[in-house]
Picture 1 (cartoon, helix red, strand yellow):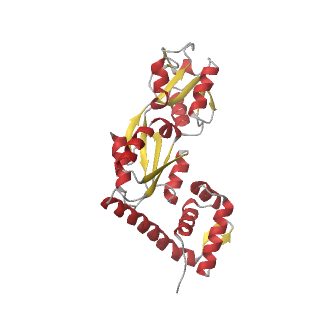
Picture 2: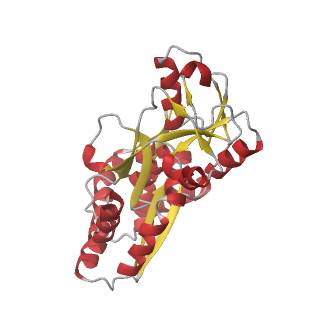
Picture 3: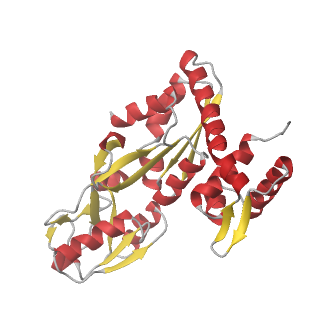
Length: 294
């Protein structure tokens, strides 16, 4: 029996199963929801059978879909393994390495390691996509990126995926009353806090900090981007910002922004690599990870 299944169809199929919804799969793959639906419909026409059916809980796999899933995962893994093995035997192999990273890493950590990687692997095309931690994990699971880089609270997970440790810094404009001074949770509680994503790990660390001190939470506002936080702080001297140390290192050194020394200190964070389970790491990915660990 001849079929013309394509890897991109299998990738969409696995992504929908892994994410549990067409909309989440579309976000992970960076395509429209209509593209997901059209791809699955074309796949069902090729196979001559339905692989999803409607239920009260949404779309669920048919018996044919259940049978297809392990083969789809295996075929995607073999395709990745093939490219990985070719790269092991020759630096002349052409390909694309897609890295998904949180904004502070893509802007302030990755540029230099990627420049070095381009020099060592001149025929490899490098792409960086920016996202939030949950979206990055979904993209890796869906196979739309080769490596995910996230920053999160260290929570006793697999230490082998930790690349580096970092700190969150509370900072303000040089004219802020707490600039270059120590401040307690009780003093900080009166300030507005700006951060790039008020629903992520930074928000969680700050919330836990005040809860541990049994102090009411300050007002927290999301400004969307790292640059937006910095500009927001400089535009209003009463607010404080919360960002990873590597994102404000230059401004603190130049005196454009001023650190607030909090006592007790905030909980630390880690930079973590996210890789698809069961897939062999390519030598290019291993090269980048080694550089980031260094």
